[in-house]
Image (cartoon, rainbow, N blue to C red; front, side, top):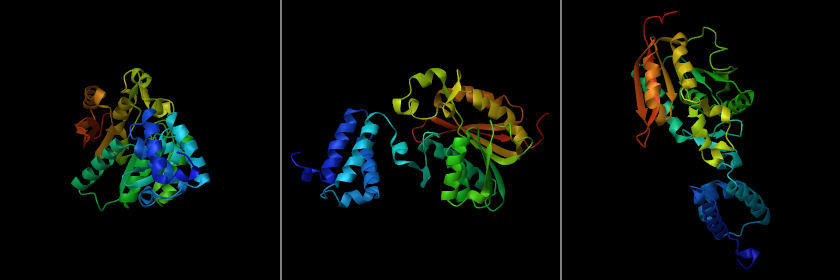
Length: 298
């Protein structure tokens, strides 16, 4: 382009989309729009009525820096500081995993189960193991005013992000945040439902992850160990001791460890009705199980 005046928003978006595509982005146009909206301090939809507007110099400078970092592999969510989950915006940074659409199936399964059990109007106690950004805990509290949620994470930095999200969505008074390595800080407490998006990536899989995941997102929240089922096994083994009778546990899983995970959950004497739900791409995504009504063995 020959002059600065040529840098309209529309041309800026087109050039950037081409540039990001050449640098490996799977959604170059969307990335460009999100980053430009961030630089202008506007909603992305507002760009569509402003394509002929000349981009201000300060906007171009900020946009240039964001695009450079995106081309280097930095996730868009970290660059703009938030990500939508279940139609709610969540603050995110490098201390927490970026919420993904697949994880919304945990919410769907939980809400369906609450309705099937006729618990919609009753007070319920929910445990979110490994809360990270708090997307599960906050979404549950936001949509179910009767819910009291305990959000557990081993990372104090992650809990700080989760608290900020709870405050943002005005549910801070209904969520307890607990720094704990899984069950360690819970003692003998019991809940009606347990949800978790635990680490389930194997050591070998981690080596082959996309650069923007492996290089930027916290490894602690991704990798379980050599098998990928290490954390899931700990959750399954202890879930009966922390669920009320007929309570349910739901965990996100990788399709690659479906069979191994199902075997683990079916092998726990205090759990029954083990089932797997598929995501929109028909891949195994959520494992669910009910605690037997009788007390589990000591």
